[in-house]
Length: 278
Ligand code: COA
Ligand code: MG
Image 1 (cartoon, protein in one colour):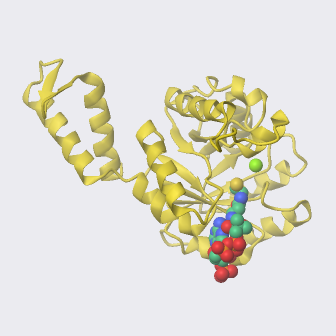
Image 2 (image 1 turned 120 degrees about the vertical axis):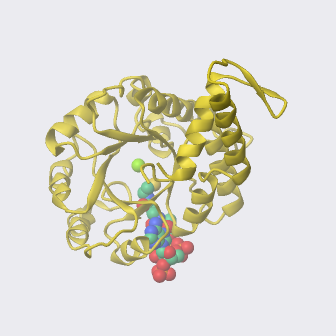
């Protein structure tokens, strides 16, 4: 599978959680060296990663390093020598230039950038469109952004995410689509609220995100389910593709009593690709 549906964070200094994550159903694990690891634990967290057991299949392995410019960043980069590492998660990215800078130091290992965590980052979301870049995914985060903006809360009076963070989310989605990389929805922090998570993940999937960050193993199955095309959607997509194959010269057709044209065909093909796990 090229695009992980669930990306499970695990603090790399906790061997116990790391072992649990390796056993989870996540499509990708993000071993975290950044915000979930206390400053005094950075070195021992790196050591846990250096001693990961040999793998045979299972989830992709990604490491979230500390941001460019932080004093831990350089030492974190040594971890790319871990043989089974699939890629690097770069937090607090502000533009495509950050990805390029990192790629110069890391060769062409895939990069997943978290692209809405600083004030400046919101102005950089169109800058990730470099066809030579090893960028593979973009996700968004509200926690660091609200701290950077001096917000008392990221929620409005009705308990909904405030406009600024919804804007960040949409810019991430459009920026990732523009760059041709996977758009990944941010974390749902209330890990005991599985109904809330399911609703948020399903909404993200409807909007075009193809995966979501997770912070707890219990979040993985609902996320995987939300980003797996439903049987009805697959059938409908097959009907659309079949209709255009039967009428190769048609620009617009009627399928199931509704108009379908080129954008519907593209969408249908994407659903079928995801259903096949391409
Ligand atoms: N990965 C792997 N295992 C995890 C896990 C994770 N992200 N989160 C929890 N677990 C394990 C726990 O260790 C516990 O196992 P145990 O009973 O064998 O010790 C089990 O799952 C149940 O955990 P639970 O008691 O429900 O949660 P908790 O109070 O131990 O932990 C958090 C809650 C939020 C601290 C924890 O989920 C966590 O560390 N999440 C990741 C945070 C992170 O990486 N943030 C950075 C990105 S925003
Ligand atoms: Mg953070």
